[in-house]
Length: 394
Image (cartoon, rainbow, N blue to C red):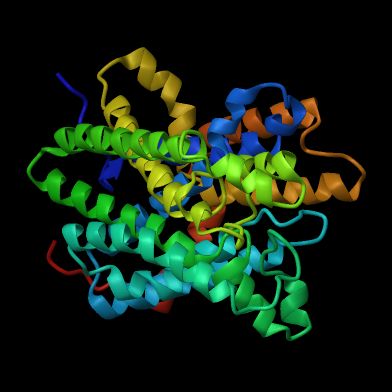
């Protein structure tokens, strides 16, 4: 007999916790082992995809958080949660850390997008995700043609901008051309909300396993098709050769741009919008990374429901890590800052392994005694205090 996909008194989706753990681990790997062992090419599978998965899961969480809440209560709690995440993201974005903190973008999505869309149906959210995956990258590309050059590539909202009252730069990097611009992260968030609607709806009729299988198929098709089309454009259609022939630096510069970006696509060619490049915010990246995230979520839901006790015992630390994503991510960022400030680096092998294994161990022990992670409890408590829950019919 298959283990239920939803378990526990709170109706948790164990697979979602597993997917969150994979997203967190993927970001950890990109910040540590990717630099420790640059010759291991398969680490690049996490590049851009881990943070996209985390953003899609943030959208899923919006639906889970609001499914039993009245409209006004839900809006206040979403905005409160967003303000807390935005403030934490800004506080963590210190010079010793560098421009890798994504929490400000997540916070902004909770403030700007979630209150306007959390009541939409699943199909409408799916269509909105598809439309914005095309419209937002193109709009960003057009807007940036009329802006002065960015102060730096891959910058993020920082405390220094707030302290100096530089709100124009703050909003510009948060919304348009930072490392994680809200404009081009909206599709991930909306896609996650569509997945959340699907899971909640199918749970009522006990068809979540079928829905999870459908997510795997849909995600694999989207991801594979996007990569194939992108490679066709880069190779047989001649995008790489044409760009290398016209760009300063030639083939070396073009290959560097194809290997990774800093939040936005280059402005020298519209073709970049059709090419899959990690962290570029191109149409191809948004569609492909969304597909990967959807497939991973579906697969995690299925794996989490397998009635194999040894497997579930092995997955317990992973599920536990997935229940404290904010705490684990914040601790990871703080560790980066502390080590950098003391002339060390989290990518040093001993710290890389500690960073990977210690959160799993701590999370496993933590949930033997507590129901929520420390920062998760704070955010939940503050948002509930801001607007006490008023239940609605589900």
